Amino acid sequence: MSTSSSQAASGRRLPRFAEAAVERARLTVVPARSLGRTQAARTPFAVLVLVVLAGGVVGLLMFNTQMQQTSFAATALQDRATELTARKQALDLELDGLRDPQQLAQSARDLGMVAPQTPAFVRLSDGRVLGTPTPAGGGDAVQVTPGPSKKPAEIERRTVIVEATPRAAADATP
Image (cartoon, rainbow, N blue to C red; front, side, top):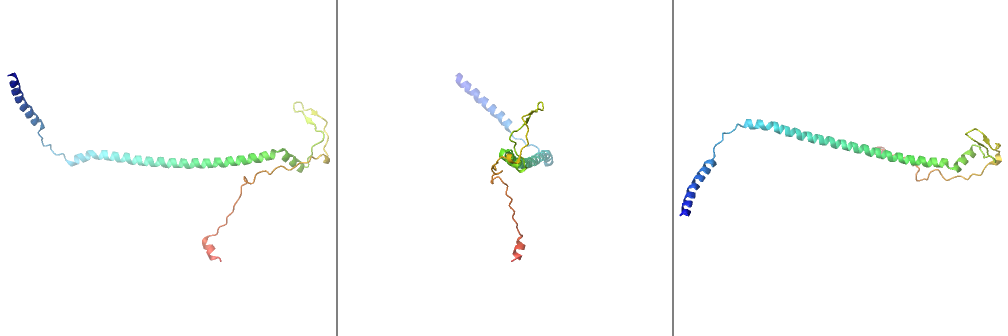
């Protein structure tokens, strides 16, 4: 009997829960807000978003332009460094040619200098002359063979001059 009485009690309790749920779920009409008030609340936010967006686009454009200018400057500096390296190598090659003993001997002979048979040396520490200095004569000249060319032809800079005439002038002359 206790089972039937508990079912009857739960049957009475269910309608009370359902009534309370229906009361809570009833829809009520909310008074309409004026459109100007919500529009006025959205305007500053929209303006802020547009300003941030425009600032980001302008900043990105300026950053991109700056990076391109820096890239152009770096390329120009690399080209200049390459040119200066090639110039240094050419000057080093020329200097090595000028320091060549055969080149020095040839230059000395062109100036009329000859090597003496018995050279004398001056000691720099005390200024004392070692050996007997004798003047050199014309018969003391040493045979010098000319050295190799100063620069290979591949390194020599070639100047190419191209003369162009304007098309109108070329058409007018037969």
